[in-house]
Each structure stands twice: as C-alpha cells, then as structure tokens.
Image (cartoon, rainbow, N blue to C red; front, side, top):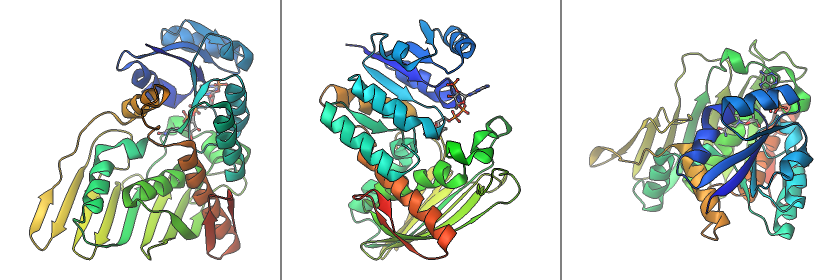
Length: 339
Ligand code: NDP
C-alpha cells in the first residue's frame, strides 16, 4: 500500500531531499503541497509533479492524505502539526518541532491521544556513519566512553540566508537550526541523555536579527560523567565537519559526517592500530521516510520519534538559556523545560 503524503511548506528541504525520499521506494506518493502563497503552491506543485497545490491547511488535510511532512519555518510547526493530528494524519515534522520544548511536548501528547505517528526529521541519526559509531560503542570497542567532540560549524549558503539569520520570531539562529541536530546525534551515538549544558553564542557578522546568534559552542555533561563539546555555526566556510568519541580503550574519529549526504569516514583507533569502519550509504532522508512508513505499518518507530524531538529542543533551549544567563543549565526533557 502506498502512503499518501501532503507537504506543508514549499520549502528548500522538501525540494532538495524529501520529495525524492518519499518517492524513492515506490511506497509513498505526494498528493498535495501547501504554501501560504497560492501562486507558489501551484508553481511548486507543477515543478514537482504534485497533483494539487493548495494554500490552506483545510484544503491540504482534506486532500485524501494519510500523512503530512511539515517543513515550514519553525514558528508554524506547532499549529500545523496539531491541526494535522486533529484531522487524524500522521506527522513527520522538521526540527525543531516547535519554538519551545513545552510546545513540542504538546505535539507528542496530542499524537499519542489521537493514535497517530509523530516523527522528527533528525536526518543525522539515519547516517550509516553515526549508526556504525553507535554500534561500535555499544559493542565495547572503545571501552567506556569518556568524551565526545562534534564539529558542525558550516557556512550557510547564500540562498538560505533568510529567516535563519533575520527572524527570531521564526525560530532563527544557529542553536535552533544546528545545535538541535548535534544534541540528537550525541544522544543517538552515545545512547545516553545529556543532563546539563553550558554554552556561549556569538554573532560573527552574518545574523542580523535582534539577539540572533550565528555561532555557538556548547559543553554537555551526560549522566554517566561523559563530557562533550559541540560547535555550531553559519559563518565558517572552510571548517569541515566531524564527530569524535573517545573511550578508555579507543577512539572513534569520524570526518565529514555532519552533513545531509551519506558520505564521510569513521576511523577506530585502539592499541591494535587503526581500522576504517564500513557503513551503509543509504540516503539519510530515504531512510527517515522508510522507517516512518514502517512505523505506519506497525513495524517499529520512526528513526527519531516525537520524544526525541522534545529532547533535542529541550537541549537547544537549555543551551540558549545558558548563553543568556552565563551559567550551566540542566536539561529536563520529561518536563519539557530548561532550568
Ligand atoms: P525555506 O526557507 O526554504 O522554506 C521555509 C518557508 O519559506 C517555506 O515553507 C515557504 O513558505 C517560504 N519560502 C521558501 N522559499 C521561498 C521563496 N523563494 N519565496 C517566498 N517564500 C519562500 O526553509 P528550509 O527548507 O531551509 O527549512 C524549512 C524547515 O526545515 C525548517 O524547520 C528547518 O529547520 C528544517 N530543515 C531541516 C533540515 C534537515 O536536514 N532535517 C535541513 C534544512 C531545513 P510557504 O510554504 O508558505 O510557501
């Protein structure tokens, strides 16, 4: 059976990755796309061979769909997700799920009550590289993990230099854009939740919206005592990305893996020497949709659940509060709040 999708948002991420991902395996079709602008809706639908381009949520939700993919700007996710859930549709929502973790928690609660599936489109945990790292750690290959480092400061391409750097009301800024991914990837690879974060943010010349940051460095503490650092940014053209985990018996050093494509390498270094870990190269977004489709069929859960989205947002929220207050902030995703 083919899953019938409605796209909420005529966005870049839909255009670049998600339309292909939904269609990749022949078990998903896109019935309609919604844009707030009727002309954009029609043009986007035509460009991508989508039967209906609509400009209201009611029209989209009434188009005979099973699921929605939400990729509008961040301030719109909550209302659109709740409306879709209310209409009995499954929801795959972009990160951050909402502007606050308390609102994200509302989405999770509503989806549960309605008996629909809610997933968060954290693509990085779908990367073979990160799954290989998680498996190696779980298998004891680096002993007891002690520390991690995430290098995820990039250069925001010119065509995306819009709301992310000008609109705090839309959930702009590097923390809600990238730190959420890093928090999720750390949780996934380490299979552990962060308990506290201390962060500095900066405006290095790109972000112009009031109070918006275009770079951040975060220090994370996990329950086991593991500490981690992450660097997120929009302004570094030549930095490259990476993810390292260092344990008592070895280190995992992944290069070029904090990205949208199934690329990069993972090196395991121990007393025995160095070993390049093999991993599958399935498209990250195709895997996200594949797992979501399976969850609709009652097989497992989405790659990142709604709860995972609450966790990543609570973590990012705590990082923002830390940067503002100048103190370490504890992370409590159960309560959906940072203190
Ligand atoms: P875009 O800026 O491309 O799109 C966001 C909204 O802006 C669209 O919904 C659209 O509104 C409007 N818009 C887009 N292009 C134009 C245009 N040319 N003229 C006027 N309006 C336009 O956002 P992204 O695709 O970069 O991000 C969307 C969401 O996806 C965000 O939540 C972001 O955090 C997330 N994201 C996730 C990624 C991941 O890998 N998981 C990667 C990138 C983004 P309308 O629909 O009303 O037409």
